[in-house]
Image 1: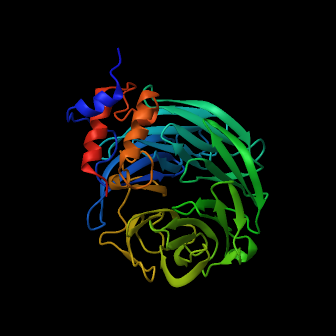
Image 2 (image 1 turned 120 degrees about the vertical axis):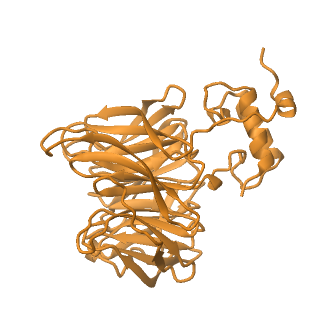
Image 3 (image 1 turned 180 degrees about the vertical axis):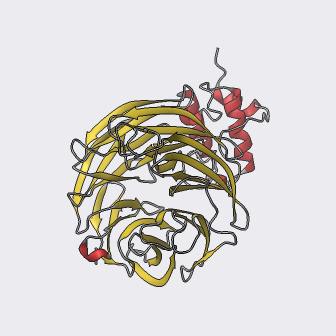
Length: 431
């Protein structure tokens, strides 16, 4: 007979448990490389320096003519609870893999699931801890936005939904609420917004914009979205949109598309407070800093960092006060790997932390995702940043409904240990 949750909340003991997530800030890097695919983990020390921890190889081959579904680890994302990484692979020769990794408390990695699809994906993003969105990109066939259910107990991915999404699907972004997904069709210069209901996605809006749309990203609070224009529209353009969370509608910002002093905008990162926008560029391999006003309109701050040869600057991500960027080649400057920068919050200037860049020990670091355990407030069940009665009530409701969010130790059972974890975390508070 099941004990009533209210009693458990009053009587649970302080029982320790181990959650699968890095206990320290870390970055995780997808290493592309035509002859190999791998993922590296590096800890972020208190001074911002990086310490290499682990590398897991997902595939290798002697020539690019050989099929290798696990080569070219391309896009990477981390589940909101920090327990699982996902990577896409873009080997360009036959079927491709999607790979799931479990993250240990020391940031080391182990592969727990691999699925193979006929055509690979250029991007992916976790919608929730139990739902993964992926791009299926096919120049000669159907491009799809797919949703996969993730079962953390059986550690299996299961296809839940597939939606045809244009002629060249290259980027996907998930709104912070988890309710909305936006993906771009580069060939059609459009973005599509989908509403997520359970494990299904329904098209909500298709909007055109005046750039090619290499990639698309939401601001930290989800109020704005930006699309990089690459070499299109003069080679200096990126589009900006406001986003209405209630209707799921994008609206182009006044003055969009905007002009960057860098050549071929390709990707974005944001300061954690949403005040600064960092734009990566392909042709001149620079990171350019912009301020964002209250309406999301960017203004160039005139500060930049150049990693070297054209095309060598790859993915970026941020933690509070720091930016991480990938340099995939030693050409020109003789260095490559993972950069860690201190961010000047006023000028947007980027100062490399001593020792940067740190080798990832993989071929061609391509994409990066950052993790800060302090940002994962386990007992904040309402997501409002405040711990109170409403979080306790939300946990009780989720627990009684056997909701995966209340299975805090991820063992497939809802019992004393989950309640104990909640009590410990609640009493400890959140930053």
